[in-house]
Length: 108
Image (cartoon, rainbow, N blue to C red):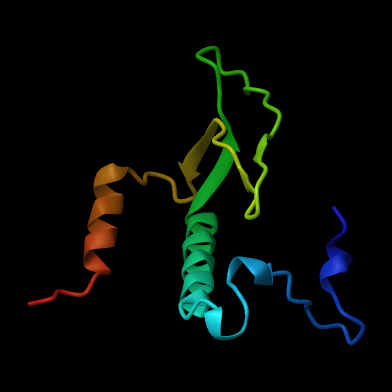
């Protein structure tokens, strides 16, 4: 991992998005910015609220796996085993459901 590859000559961040996925010119996807912002919001929310760890066997040992990728124009990882643990102690499905419902806008 070489994080400095994302820094340009002036010290700012480079754009690491893949333009060909969104199209070019008049055929460019009109929802590109909404799509990128939605993925960013979802990922940052998950990373802020959960710890992601390797899956475990029934004996409590971590499951070793080798990442595999779908090879195509938009390359993406194939499904893999993992576990998500809430970062806040005592968080359970009922509490999470209440938090989600309290943060949504009532349409009525």
